[in-house]
Image (tube, rainbow, N blue to C red; front, side):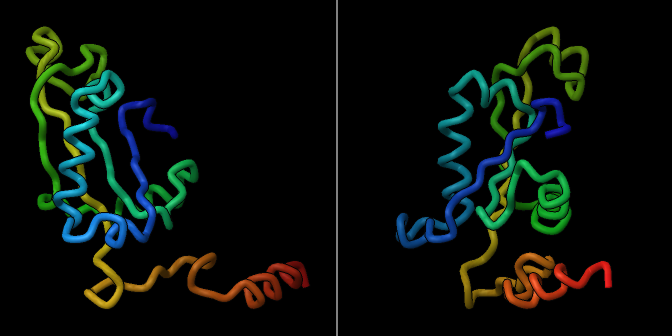
Length: 141
């Protein structure tokens, strides 16, 4: 990822609600934050984004689309304060000197199916395989 290890992306399987009955997306993101904020990689990353696994975090286009469409500008995030890596330029000089500041966990999980989830509108997911294949087979025609 081009964010130079300043971001972390955690994807969770779409059946996480069945695996964790009664747990909402805010609670799952909190649990992930609780684990990662006690680890060196978690504390050395300024922002972590929790997304459904329909996003390929290794695909910059897919990831940037998800961050632009699934991360609320103000809500659905939680900051944890403590050690931060002093080489991360996003922190103030005072935070870098103290090696202490916030790391943020962003809840980008979609609502459950049937509870307000919008359809995914990418070429790969909005069209059946046979249609995609037919179009790609005739792309140069």
